[in-house]
Image (cartoon, rainbow, N blue to C red; front, side, top):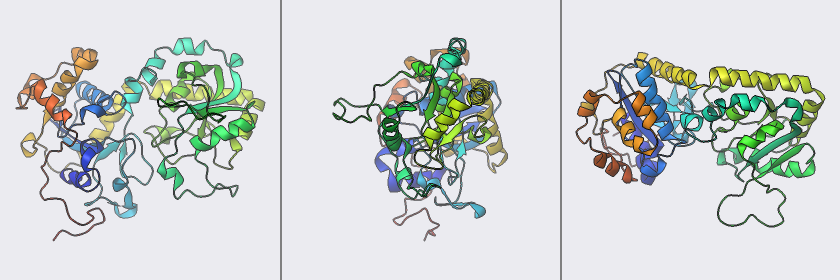
Length: 410
């Protein structure tokens, strides 16, 4: 099944195949890459961040022999959704396979892991703000503005536009990022939400939904913060938890790895789950129930500090890999793969771009590096410079017919 992931590449994302799914092998405690991202996808917010935490987890814990795939896009691809969950059948040819992802819907068979790059690599990510928690907590609750604040790009993903049920009020479903700025203009005393303009061209003239961007570090001055999903889960929600402000989360079917531990009205409050303008009622409630709103915010902050810190994330990654290892029925080996790059070597290669601390703390295994014949930095640079690179190691060529719905091979 792992090898047949390349069928997805062949049929749908030929020109971007090597970042949709990246194949990973662990053997004798060492992690190997059986495919790689192209260079332009190696930014800190996605694949590189996951590699950093996977590498660190492999040095902190003894990980079992296993193979799995990492979903390299924002959200688990539709090909990995359940066709029949009761029978463990997916849309993908061959059934469910070990695919990890940092965002998905309940329909997906992917297994959730942390969005490591957003947590540890971004300058406005969780880990950086956790180090500044004392300064954040000096912003008194009483001094924060009693307005719900939100900023995002003007964007509505396809899954929010298609097939969403009507709201309980009978109104059509509203895409939060597209809709809430209009509600903000109706009641600016309650909601300050707007589009942040992106690109080189100026924003459209006369559109009041476009607002001035405010750095996320300055948003702590608001008592209520609005979290909306895009293609995937919001990367700001866990940071908002740290801020100790009340998080107002818009309804969404996208999930992150820690979402099943959260409870509405205990860690956050919701909007756009009863009517199109219910966020205004939520803010009115928070204003009139200030002590309860503050209690929810403080509970969320304690949760984030305890359960989302780096050591907890490494533990979660270890647990996922150990559970996968218990289900393995064969022993993976580099001799069965066209490409098998020791992750330590790949991390060492990337250390020239800001990973020095990780390599210094956990030097790559020299024995593992020797198993990789094309071990030079030049060889790796050539691999990631090819946007279409995909190791050809599946048993059979791609099917001419749709391969994801159980079509038998002739």
